[in-house]
Image: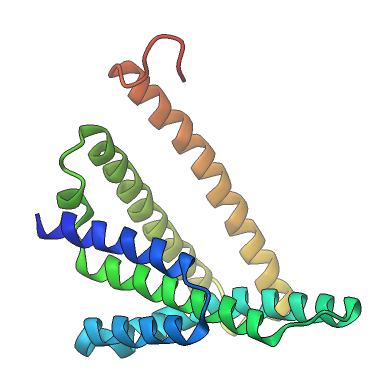
Amino acid sequence: MKDRLLLLGYAACVILATSVHDPRWLAGGVLLAAALAGRQALAILRRTLLPILFFNLAVSLGYTLSGLIRNDFQFGYLTLVNIRVLLLTFLTFLLAARVDFLRALNFSPTLTYLIVLALSQIMTFRRLQEEFRLAGESRRLRRLSLRDGYAQSATVAVQFFDKAEHGAGEIASAMRSRGFFGPGQG
């Protein structure tokens, strides 16, 4: 029950964070979320900053460039977007650290089934990523050049896409054979 309440609280916080348009209130939300995270706050903040760094950088640079060209740049809006993304991402990582999704969604067999499928795919891709990393390290004596690193990453990405496509087909077949899709669906 605790997990379900936390998930509902997260949904309410997301709705609230997207409804508030004052950066001061959003910054207060970040501080409140950090207080709720307790000792985990710094670790969650570190996990939050890396993914949003590239997103916020790209969006901020694009918005700034566009605003300067059109002569309607608004620093307040840029601040609002960046703080909102920080808050929402921090809340998401906090949720992932605190909630057991299988327990939170056990009221619905369909949602539980989807979570199991998603978790199995995540574990498979995590294992594959580690195997590719170890295989790459075992086949070279020195660090790859930037160009070779990009080529290897592209090859691995193609393998992941192929694996995802094949896995999606297999999962759809398994779900169909178990009667998950009704007549005329899937």
